[in-house]
Image (cartoon, rainbow over all chains, first blue to last red; front, side, top):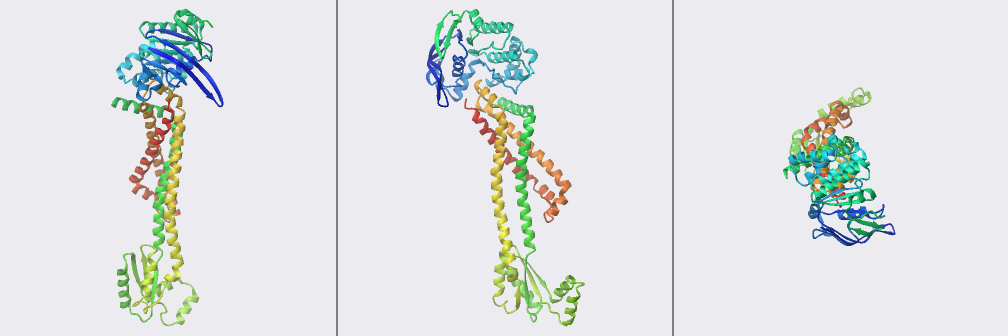
Length: 229
Length: 303
């Protein structure tokens, strides 16, 4: 479904060059649950930004269902991004909209009717436990609640792939367990899930394929892997 | 399409209303822009009024020799009126009228009164006072009168005496008109820069949200639309608020303002030109508001 083909990403910082990813190649099958692990600075978030085409690779390409992501732009890029549900590490919520409006916005982007938004939004808010906060603005939520809203936003439009960048980073153990269960449930319904994390316990408990990054390189790709760092 | 349009309008209004503090700042700054636009519009009205009023006060007088009869002078008057369309009016002042005017003007001035009594005859000349449409006409009228058959009838023409004043006035009125155009151009550029920067700053605060909208797959129009609606709302509010405040200002202070502008009735001019002024204000501000929003958001859409 998604193929990372020899991806290298080099950033230029004044007269210095920083290699975030070097010759990274791996494949994600449709319906797979994949964890990408690594220490801070290993290149996990860069991988997400390349997948959403926030960045273009310096070398190599990402193939999504036979489409070269690097060559996408305009309408094609919009349609591609609508197929992804991304939980960003910094949430990237719409701070000028309420919790309910943040979710409705995604459905409106897809051209869904107001009726279907009114039907689906409460369901998803219920799943992430934010039904009582639907009229609050993100700035009125705690860190954990904002993270759950980011998860709800990634789920609302039933995307083909969910990419979750440190989705449990600000959650307590109980909520961490809930989020992981939620991702497992979504996966069981046939959605491809890519989890980027440095939480050893979470990844080990999943017993799913783990790709380990270190200094921008893949050092392990284990189908029933464990967090080895 | 209609659903999207409704949603964009709703988002625009939400953005405007939820950021009331920022919106108030933008509206206030854009009111300065409306003030400049209104000032330029009224400046043109006032300058045209002042030019016309000053021109009205300038004329040339043709003094006839004592032996020229009144009938002959009235014939000359008709010939002058037929000489050019640039002549606004020609008024005949008889010797007696000239004396009366003089006596009126110098009432209580014994020296002049005694001097007049000494001269038994009326020493004043009959004259024609000529007013032209524009000051540049006076030179032509004067040269027309210097030729025969008029030259032998005329004692003197006041043009040569007033030539410097008339030329200066002509120069001033031309310069005021030219200067007005330059002023309009300079202020128009200034206004465009103020509007663009104000809207740019208001959009800068939404930079992160614009990027997020782009990353979730929203189309450029779905992202830009609400900001354009906000640009329209800023323009509408600034024009309406400014015009209400300005109207109230004129309503209470019109007499004071008018006395500073040689009795030019600013309130009346504002009322008479209300429709065209509103059209100019709205079209100018809407154009700038929409273009500025469009350009400012575009910068953050490159994700």
